[in-house]
Length: 224
Image 1 (tube, rainbow, N blue to C red):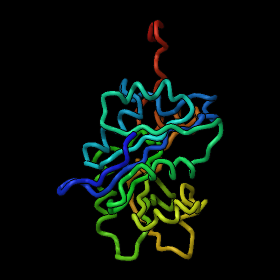
Image 2: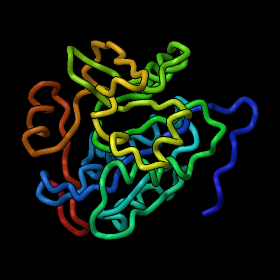
Image 3: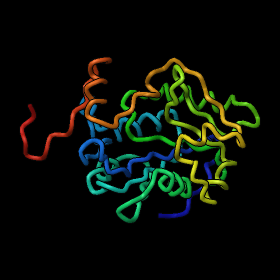
Image 4: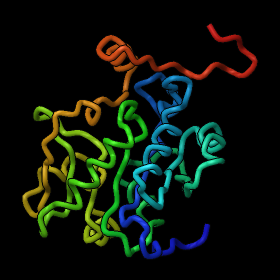
């Protein structure tokens, strides 16, 4: 992996870190980013949507199930970074991903890989909100009917705190910290708060939206 380079003139100034290193323990030890919507894995849907904003560069952090996820990204222009060791935190994944983004960015978006409904337009709207933020705002995240959502965007000025090991970064605690300027961007778009952690979340999504998530058919098996 080469060192990240600054975007050239005219390229977007928002990069993205896609978090896909988790063990999926609440889903019975299965990689939730491999769930398919309309036959396409969530990880591919997400990267394609980000590329169409456009957001660049995109760093995907893998860990558990890397050998199953990485081949799906082979035809996409992303940088893949692997977590080492059996255990790792979301904060460490954010830190690892951001370390591979150029330092000339205006900000960086942190995207969990379990957002089945977030579209290119949803990402674009969030980026526009960040670009129109106040001069002192260092963090912007969607908030829908009082519920914090994802993805979120950090100002590049936050990088130093992240590199210093601030444990709040990569967790919801950052939204409540009184020592920094965080903006809860109010939205009525439920896409930002529909994530997948359990099998019940999959059922609830289909019942409320009619959109069905399916696990990939094992190689050699016959689909239902």
